Amino acid sequence: MLSYLCSMDEEKKELLRQRLNEVHIWPSIYMYKFIFEKNDEKLIALKMIFGESAQFMVRESANGKYMSLTIKEMMMDAETIFVRYEQVGKLEGIISL
Image (cartoon, rainbow, N blue to C red; front, side, top):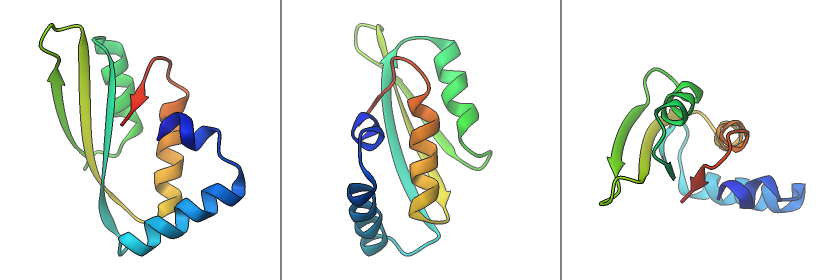
């Protein structure tokens, strides 16, 4: 989703915005999921992007090389979701699922 969103033109973003608005009644809980090489600094940087009320669940891969971060946050609208993905997109080595 992250690289896909960053490479979208406005027409595709509008289609995704419409789809989000069809599926959600705002405000709504939205779930993000990211994976990255185990790195506490990246974990902290990711957590800082999201609000204080966000719920975080961290898991390590079986070999301990990677981490996944699942975030649930109350979002007010689809545009706020796009903003979050754009902020995360500025961090290197983060993959969105």
